[in-house]
Length: 119
Image (cartoon, rainbow, N blue to C red):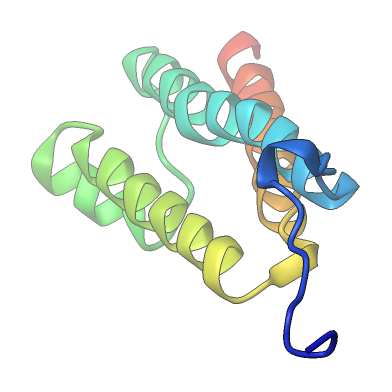
């Protein structure tokens, strides 16, 4: 009966080790949300309030038609939600790519908006 019985260690005794890519992707979500989510919206609002205009050819007519930045907020929420779902269910160990790209794109947009605002 030696082969029929198997000793399973207590789960509390097994140390769990998180993969580095999981920790990296978790850490990258903060700058992604701050830069892409909030930073771009706030700096776009500053530029528009100062008399500037939106250069995105898809968003510009929507912002002009509504007179507000709500279309920008809606599009950003949809993109952010889509990237989160993509990272969770498709990318596997490469989950860090989504927030890294959003951080880079958001950072670039914030810098561009600040340059336009200060010019």
